[in-house]
Image (tube, rainbow, N blue to C red; front, side, top):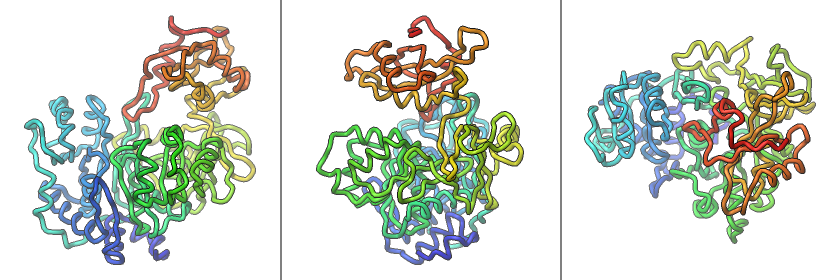
Length: 529
């Protein structure tokens, strides 16, 4: 890997990175998915064919094209083909339906949607509400005849590869990804090419990614972690990626062994599901040397290292809007820390959420971030200037996340600020309450949130909504409360317990705690006093 090229901003675009790798290592495998593998040369050639397909559909430089596909080769080729045109890929969450889908497609104003045939009924169901969409490019065999003009994605095979290189600069928009709104419509994050590149460069610098690595990707490509922190990082490094359509806890380790994977990224829940699998003779027969984890936790890191012998488990912190400004250092990182500042490209402070003044070490406040690299950050929220201005106050982007920093510069995540619970003069982290109670054998999932204290002016009380696990035996409020009293600080022990069949969620699976808060203390709530 030529390290000089890594830092030349003129090459910080998807098309130029791919062109460089196709020239240097044409026969090296780039990406494998669903039994098919593309070399770098093949990826360059086929992306050029896809670019010409999109051009034939009327797509040009700067045009938005929505992509609603599962993780796999068609997604990869769509992303690369659109980059070759200098078009803007709008990554659509494949769980979106109804009003969520209408909002995204109308907000981005895409005239073309690349969509898997299985989701055509969703488009037809809202067809009359779509103001800008004119045509579909369909992957797979349609089960119905859509009312919109339709082209077969496989038509790319009949086009000649695009020869000219007219792609974007690092200053141009390369992608729009939507946040999962919890109190309002999803916001489209406008992402310049430099921003996309820094997601990958951060992985390379902090996880030591080289052309010898094999990246195992189970997180969806419509999110920044899967697409940019993993697949794009692989391409920048000249390595190989293995893409799974979806995560399977039972296949995770066998896949890693089969493909010779050396690096992967994980979410805390993914790692927890993996650790739930029974011990196997593969536990120590893999070549996995590093994985990232967000959110992290001291116990989770310890268990991953002890069971699987993974050399490095990296914590990190980031958002689609702000990239990944925090990574834990190699060696002996503090297990509960989400990292130290990547100071070459970002600035970060912990501010008082009321005054916006910086706080001294050890005090909990809001994480605020700003970039040092031009275009190394989101450009704003698409057609939502009020939300952009609201987030960008006093020349800092306000993440809405609560954390504290120690004297060494290690940052420790606490909670979403709006999910913080203030009780008896103490800030209670719903994240920490949930982690403790989730270990109860009869609890499958838990959400902790604040409800008003019955005593006027007495701040909040802690309430939890729980989904029980039938395999864990009978569960009642008394047993969960006893565990809370044993393992939580007194001020963090919940007073109210509510057992539910399911939790209200966003399309990306996040719990809508504002809905739970609005429901308050219901008739089926148990008051533990």
